[in-house]
Length: 275
Image (cartoon, one colour):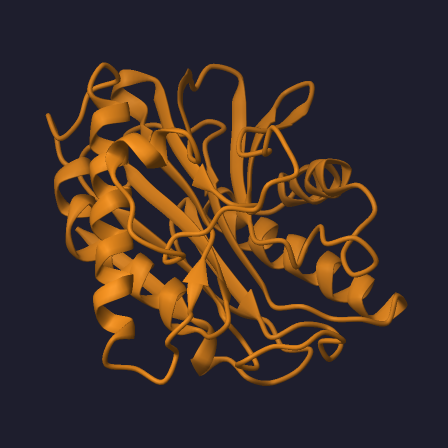
């Protein structure tokens, strides 16, 4: 398995975009296009990651609150524990996905709480948007907690699979959880990959009212259309950077900034898994 992780605490230049790409997967992160106008703990609290295995790819973004630690602990947990299993042949099925996802979310939540006992970030918490792509099965398995996004870019429209159903803002790391309690807070699903051009995961630095872009789905559609003009092995990178640059431009216009993290998997004309 090959993987990449961008930690917000390592990217502290205002207006800069840092990215890592491998084949059809890419992640990008920025402190923001303008300084935060709200109370915060750390300059950059977001994180983004991907993992590539023989059977598929895992993508995730996390929006930390009250410190960077929760988002970082969460994505490291995903990369070190379920990703090596999930991205290999026979690692997970559609029928078992909800059980797997809830177990991992519960374990990650507990790890965040344990790490906070030994940290100055005693109240750190985080959102999550996660996508597991299994091309041979034609499946997208996904999960989300909080207000981060998972855009499925189809040939005709863009759909946010992580869109919350109500105004409640839930976080991992808020307090003890069980699989049963998380089942009421997480949005977990399975869908087919047919007609999917790309997947774009983003924290709310893209979409926050009076901070980000006015229409996140339209922005993702425009950026991915432009990315199709790049060479196939650069499309994910161009899309990740393009979405982030659009967010930073919105921050400068408003002017009010936020951290932003993006992960992209380019699926159009994808053949075999990247691993």
